[in-house]
Image (cartoon, rainbow, N blue to C red; front, side):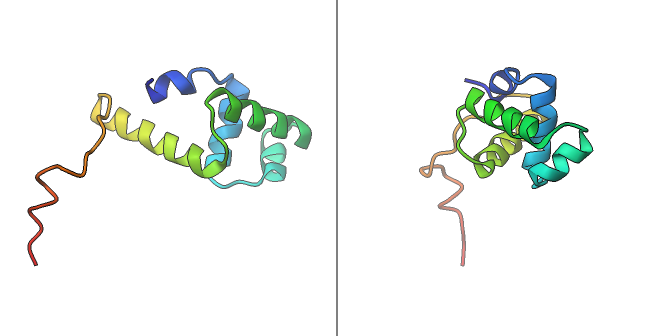
Length: 92
């Protein structure tokens, strides 16, 4: 499934929280920036992670980087296989 489809499952508030989580902002600072309680930030973070089946902020960052690559290229990325010819062309 496309990354965009996964991210479209987030509410507006979850999206705001999750992008700050990806930037490495602590929950307490996110709460202050978005003028919401710490428990609300924690709830949005947990809900956002559950909706796209992620376990931690590192996986979230990886997903968002993939989304930005898809948008930059204007298409879906296909997996890169280690058997590609570009690997064998390294000269030393």
